[in-house]
Image (cartoon, rainbow, N blue to C red; front, side):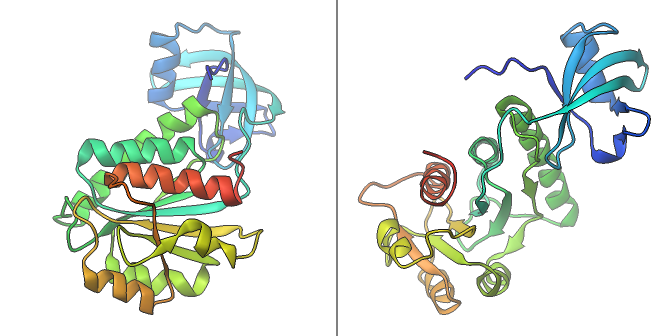
Length: 255
């Protein structure tokens, strides 16, 4: 569906609601001025990444940004899913992981956790390397949110090791699911005994080469339920998109 709103992002600190103004950063202002050719007085929509959206009017552009008048708070173009869905996925090569970030945003995931696994396609060299990748993924998620109408930005965590993830998640999550190519049950069987209103789901998807036997057993011992997606072999990025779609259909707002 084509979005008709001209949407921009500004973090909550950029809003001075008592003055009814908001400031756009340099990148957003450059897009408004140079690409869309907006002029003072033109109306746009600005969302704050925390769930709020406002109809605004351009006041002025300057070298480092733009000042807008806040006219009225509006309902976001698309509502957030009631499902708090975190996707943890093994590190994939550049464009594949980019695709997952984009589609997870569109499908309403709340958070992505990149995971270093035994057979992951990518290795994080150091902390700076991890931060650079997260910055890139955050930029992709922002652009996807602008396109699809979400007013809340999907969180992207820094990469984490497999065992650390397994140990951390299961005690705090209503439904931790590991999607694997073997040793599991269908999603229908797994969710049959789960609460119909499960509002917090954690989905873990493996790398292109699949999970090591030790990883599956470690997850099972940690309280995770193992899910298989049928007889076809799916690429990792496809499996991630399918998993989100199925979970949003079962517990969220994907009819």
